[in-house]
Amino acid sequence: MNLHRITSLTSCLFLLIATACSLASTESVDNNSKNWNQVEPTQNPLTKTATINIEGEKTTVSLQEYSHPLLTTYFPNQDFIPESVSSGEGTAIRFDSNFGGTKNETAYVQFFFPGYANTLNQLKQSWIEGENGLLASNGWRIIEVLPEATYPWAREEIVFQQPEKNITGSVYLGELAGNAFYVVTHYPVEYGDGFVPRANIILQNANINPSNSRRN
Image 1 (cartoon, rainbow, N blue to C red):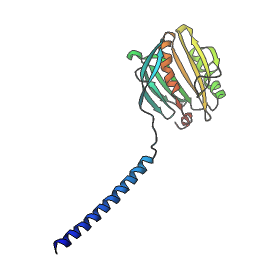
Image 2 (cartoon, helix red, strand yellow; image 1 turned 180 degrees about the vertical axis):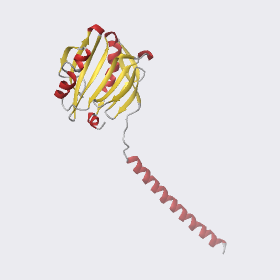
Image 3 (cartoon, one colour; image 1 turned 90 degrees about the vertical axis):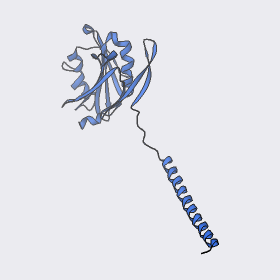
Image 4 (tube, rainbow, N blue to C red; image 1 turned 120 degrees about the vertical axis):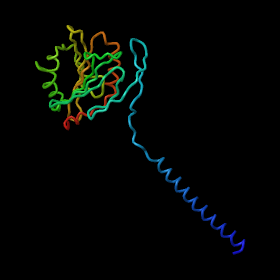
């Protein structure tokens, strides 16, 4: 085999390799383009921050996501301790205050999803009103009933006080997809300026799915 023939074969081999590489490169670019065009499902961040107004001053607080089949929300993770408990009557999800690292069970936000309450009327009759209802059994006196509540998931707000213990708060009544539930804010009066804006973060970010209470 002479030198000219070897050179010719080498040139042909080089062209074949270059062509194959070019095709592979084009296929890779096409595949990458397809990947770029695919929309990945979005997820809530596990943590974020929020700015709130406490006693006239803007304060930045760190938030952590709380996830439960019935409720997803964010809470100030240095100021509240979350826990949940379920029984035959329903499921309670509670955020106890932990200001300055000191837990106070008289200042809390609590969501309650009854095992049986399909409408607001059923919720009121079985859980809220009457001698054995939430208000009377705790000694909470109704101050005001607001038919238009602050939060989109709430249908009614009952403002209450317990003067002998210097306690105040609200009971929010909600109904979604044929399932009724209630939410309580409960705190000493002197906690108001610091508790309310922090609790408001939990309530504003609440994404509620009470239909899951039937499966628990």
